[in-house]
Amino acid sequence: MRIVIPEIAVVALIGVSGSGKSTFAKQFFKPTEVLSSDYIRALISDDENNLTVNSQTFDTLYYIANQRLNLGLLTVIDATNVQKEARAQVLRLAKEQNCHAVAIVLDIPEKLCKDHNDQRPDRNFGSHVISRQSEQLRRSLRHLQKEGFRHVYVLKSEEEIANVEIIRVPLWNNKKSETNPFDIIGDIHGCYDELCVLLEKLGYAVD
Image (cartoon, rainbow, N blue to C red; front, side):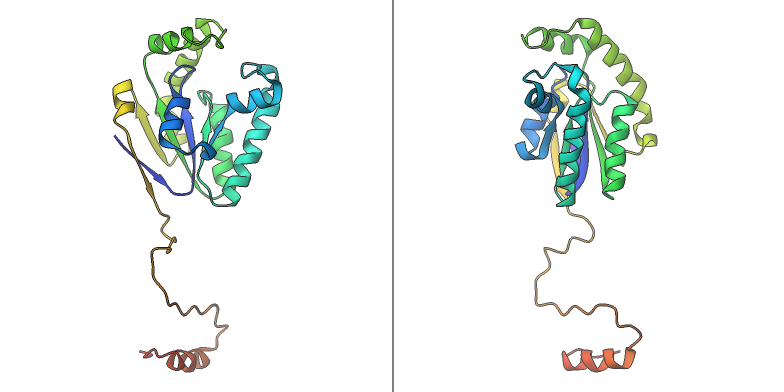
């Protein structure tokens, strides 16, 4: 599957715990582009599973996301994002920053997610959490575009994930590929005659 992402966007990785979001992020994005809720939770409390600091975690995550987007940098939100309320934060950020929101969903089988979590000693929550997240994800899939995500990509197997190609496309107003020299004239404030004189001095033929 080809996943096309604008060069400046908010990318929400969506999937239950154990679906491979962090591995996916490491494979396809620079470390500095990825804001992981688990990692920030660990920075705050020394424990990435400490849900009592969720409020501080996401306040910090979205503060950093805002700072990155202020600089025109692609930003990836690595969290479960299976709840509509969590995705609303992503969409609100995209709206405030006037950029597209992209959803990449890792919708792999629930049993595989449970197996992955069983292999991780730092995941000490029960399988019922995975089941609840899976149900929330299933209810969410058909509504993602209606919620406001401009692009939605759903990967349903490890094989599909392994064969992903991510394409970054420049914004329509990104003219970095154009070569100089340029003559840039701003608002002429109604001075048409003066504009014509200026253009002729610059070597243009006024039609």
